[in-house]
Length: 137
Length: 137
Image (cartoon, rainbow over all chains, first blue to last red; front, top):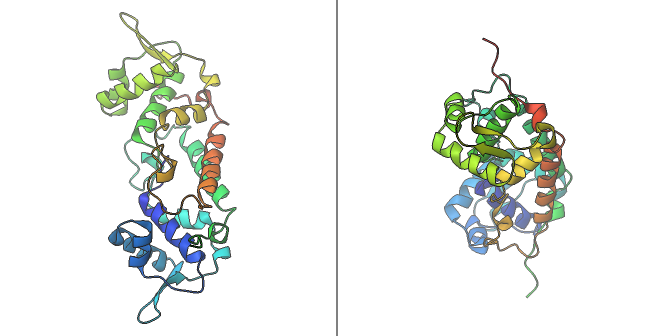
């Protein structure tokens, strides 16, 4: 079972923002800190912004910050958003795939319930629980 | 969140075997029924056989069948086996990856608990619950 790198990077960025609510970050700064592609991170940030999780302000003192208090954003909400186009198995995709066991499959509903259990567990924590700061030097 | 196609195909094969406990199948027959690559399915079957979930017998009347009663094989056991080398995120891999948020990350343990919840839900069902047969013509 895998989450995408897109989701992984999004979670890292949100944890970092949650750890410094008093300031804004440039995407390039976060990418450098994490040692990851700035281009890739920018795409994640765009998704987070369009979903209203982060706010981007231009100009001096501008940059990226959480758009809502960290304690109101659950990990489940973030993962649901960033994994929205990831089908657990082929038949979960909107295109449906070509599995010949449908429509009599008794597995699909069980996999769906397992995915719900995964997300429900993540709903028990918020970004505030996972706020991250660099260690004091 | 995605399971591999390897796992997907393995589950399909096991569901089919569970639905016809009185006979054996050639891998090629299953691949044809499912409309999938025989080569790919053969690799999955090899993994299932080495883990003692299926038995392969050569010769006339030979072929593939479940090595244990379907009601003793949980979906969780199958998914754990077939996803064994899939790290939920980079830092779950044995190589550890390069995430700069470690070792102070407060997300990793929460993701691990969510994965456990996913598998625990799958442990509530067995292959007998998901046995599949073609519809009577």
